[in-house]
Amino acid sequence: MLTNIGKPLAQQIVSTVKDVCGQDINFIDESGIIFASTDEKRIGTYHEIGRKAALTGTAIEVDTDNSFTGTQKGINMPVYHNHAFVAVIGITGDPDDVRKYAHLAERITHLMLREKELHATSRTQEDKRHFIIQSLIGNLQENRAYLMDCLSEYSIAADTPKRLILIRVSSRYNMVNRSMLEQKIYQLFQSIPLPLFTFQYPNEYLALAEERSFSETARLAEQFAASYHEFVKIAVGKSCDLFQLAESYHSALTALKSIENTTESYVLFDTLTLEIILSSLSEENKTEFLQKTTAKLTDDDKHILCAYFEEDMSLSRTCAKLFLHKNTLQYKLNHIWQVCGLNPRKFRDAVLLYLAVKVQN
View 1 (cartoon, rainbow, N blue to C red):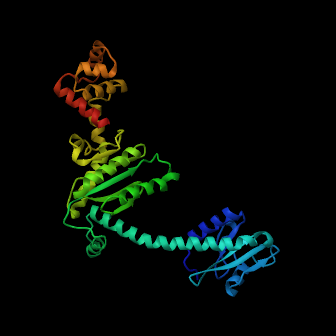
View 2: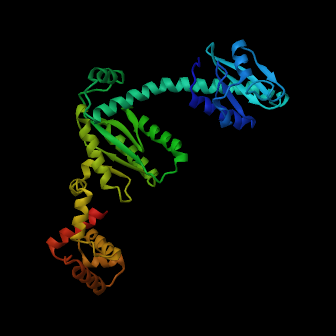
View 3: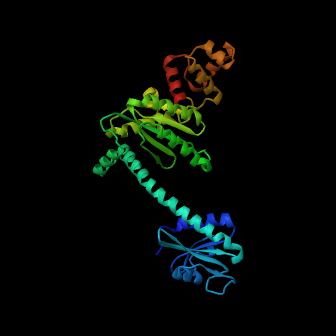
C-alpha cells in the first residue's frame, strides 16, 4: 500500500532525480509494479528485485541485465517517510556508477514529500479563502454555517462595507513566468489590511478590501497596475455590504470591460458613467449599432473622430493635435458626413458618432 505519494508526484520525483543523475529512475510499489518511471515503457511492468527490496526493507544491487524478471542492472532502495513505506527507488545503471546517487535520490524524495505536506497545510487555508470569496460573490448560502465559521476564523467583520478587487492577467503573458507574477500579485494582496484573496481560473485574482482603508489600498493597486500595465488590468468594484459582495464583483467586471481594449490598466467603478451603459450591450447590438454609424469609415476617419471628440469638437485644438490645416480637417469631417450620413458638427449626429467611437474602443 502506497503512503504519502501518488503517481503524479512520483513521476515528478523520478524526473527530478533523472535531471540530477542522468540515469533512468523507477518507482516500484510493494507488489513489485513500476508505477512511475523516466522510461515510459516500463510503467505498469513487474520488477522482481523491486518487490524483494520492498519485502525485505533493504537495498539490493543488480550487476547484470535480465537476471531477474523485469529487472535491469542498478540499485533498488526502499524509501520510508514518517516511518511508513513509500516506494522502492530503482536507479538503472552500473551499480559502481549509480551508487553515489542513491542517497541523493532518497533525499530528493523526502524533500518533495515534505514540500507536499507543507503545501497541503497551506492549501487548507487557500481553500478556505477561495470558499469565502466564491460564496460571497456567487451569493451561495448552502454552507452558511461553515461560511460564518470561516469569516470568524479570518476575523472578517460583517458590518463594514467592502470592495472586490479584480486582477486579470493578459493571455499574452508568458506562462513560464506566471509563478513570478503570481507571487507579486499575492505580495500586493498581503499588503492590503484585509488579507482575503484567491485565484479564479483561468487568469483572474480576486481580493477583498475594507472601504475604510480603501484610499491606501487604491494607491497600491494603481501603482501595481502601472508597473505591470503590459500584462495586467485591475478593476475595483463599488463599495457594498459583505453579503452583497456579488454587486461589487459584477461592478468590477463592468469596470474591467470598460478598459478591455484600451491602454488603461486600472479602473475604479465609481468613476464610470457612460461606460456602465456601453458595457451592458451585447456583441450583437454593438455590431448592429456600428453598422448604422461608423462601419463604412476607415481607420483614419475614426482616428480623426477620436481626436475631434477628445478636443471637445474644437477645430483649432484638433488641428493642433493632428498637425492638420484647418481646411484639411474641414474636408475630412465633410468626407465622414458623406460616407456615413452623420455630420460630426451637429449635436445629435455627433452623439451617435461619439457613442460609436466609445463602443469600438
